[in-house]
Picture 1 (cartoon, rainbow, N blue to C red):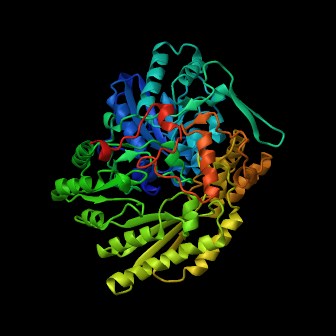
Picture 2: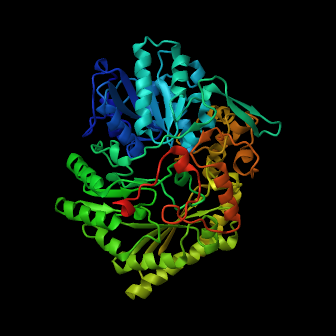
Picture 3: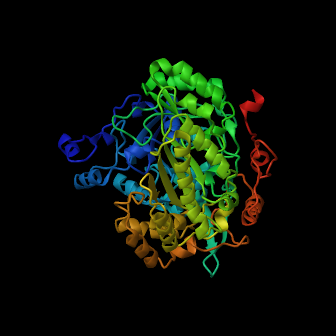
Length: 617
C-alpha cells in the first residue's frame, strides 16, 4: 500500500482526485479474492468518474465474491510530476496498491486522443508498454469502449480488446483469468491469451498478422494461430432488464463532468444517422422496461442522495414510454426534490407536454442537435428532421418558459458547401426571432456549438475524406463572421485536434510507432487544449515515415481492405455501402424500428432483436 504524503497532496490541485474513500466505494482484502481488476479511463478523475460503463462494471465485478475491482485515473500533470519525483507508481483509489500488482488492468477507450495517456499510465505503473515485453507476473492489459472497433493504432500495447457491451464478456474474461491462475498459470501468458481469444467478442491483436501493399494500404489481416477467429464479432446483451446496473454508483468528493444519476433508458439507435458510429456499434435498440427503470431510479436516489436524474441514451426522447416514465419519476421523487433532465434531444421528438413535465421540479438547460444547417445536408446525413421540426421544438420550449437553447452542429460533412455552413447561422437567427415572436421581447440566448466532422470506422462515411485542418478553420471563420449577434455564443472545436483524431480513427497498426514517439516527446492529455502539442505529433509522423494525411484526408475505395475489416459490429459492409450511395444521392433511409427493416444485418447476424416496450408492453 502506498502512503500519500499530505504535503505532496497540498501541492497539487484537486487532491481529492487521488485519495479515494468516497461514498459507495468498495474495499476488499486482496488476499481473499482470486482476481483483482483495476478499471480505468485514461483521463482525469472528473472525466473517468462520469463514465457509465465503468460504473456498471465496477458494481458487476465487485458483486463477485472472487473479484476485487478498483479504480485508477490519469494523474493530472502536477500529480504526475510529484509521483515521478518520489518514484511513486500509479496506484488505485480503493487500496492505494500499485496497479502493476493487479491481475487485470482495463482501459475504457472512448476517444482516440486519449491514447497517449494510456502509454503514460502504463509507464507510471512500471508496466512494459508492449504486450510482447510482459511476462506472467504482469497484469493483462484490456481495452474496451468504442475505439476498440479499430484499435489497430494501439494493438501493440494491449493484450486484448473487448468489442461491444461488457456486462457478460467481462465476467467471461475474469473466469478465464481465475482458472489460469488456479492452474499455476499453465502454458504461460501466451497460453492465456489464446484461451481468451476463443471468448466471443474478445480480440487478441498479437494473434493476427498484418501485411501492406506498396501504396501503403492494408493487404490483409489474418490470424497467425488456430485459436483466433478470422472475424471477431461484438458482444451484445440481448435483454438489458436482466443484467446488473450501477444502482450504487460512487459519490465523488468533488464536481465531476456528469455529477448526477445517469439512468440509461435503452441502448442502440435505429434512426440511422450516417455519421454516427455509436448508432452502428450499439444496434439494435433494446429498451429497459419502465418498471425496471423506476426501481433503478429509486435505488440510486436512496444510495447516493443525488437530486438530479439524467435520462441517458443515444436519443432519449425516442424511448417509447418516455412521457409516462417522466411523469412517474416526477411524481415518485418530487418530495425528495429530485429533478429529471434530458440531455441532447432530437428536435422531432420534443413536445411541449414533455417540456412541462421535466420542468416541474427544476428547469434544466435544453440542448438540440440539428447536426447540419441546411435541409440538403440533413438529408445527406440521414438526420430525418426538418427546419419545421426545429421551429416546433424551440417554440414548445419557449412557450414552456425556456429562454436558453444550445444547438449542436458539425461541419466538414461529406458533400458540404459554404452555403450549407452558412445555413447554421441562419438557423440560429431564426431561433432568436422565434423567441421574440412568442414572448414579444428579445433576450433569448442561443449557443451554437460546431464540431469538426471526423469519419469513423463502421459508418457509411468511413470511405469519405475528412476536411483538411485549414479547410475546417476557413469554414469556422466563415461562420464566425456571420454570427455577430451578442445573444448568440459560438463555440467550435480545434481543427488540428480533429485532424489527428481522424488519422488515428482510421489508422492501421503502424501508427503505434507514431503514438510511442509522440508520447516519448511529451504528448499526453491531447484532448485538453492547454496540453495538446500538435508539432510533437507531426514530428512523430515524420520520424516514423508516415503521412497523417494518408489516414485522415484520403478517400477510400470500396475495394480497399480497411484496418478494421476483421472486427465486426454486426452491420454488413453491403449495408454501409448502400447507405454511402444513398447519402451521395441525398436520399433518406427510414427508422427500422418504426418502419421498414433496413437490412443492416445486426439482428439476424447476432441473434438479437429490437425491444420496444411501447409496442410490446
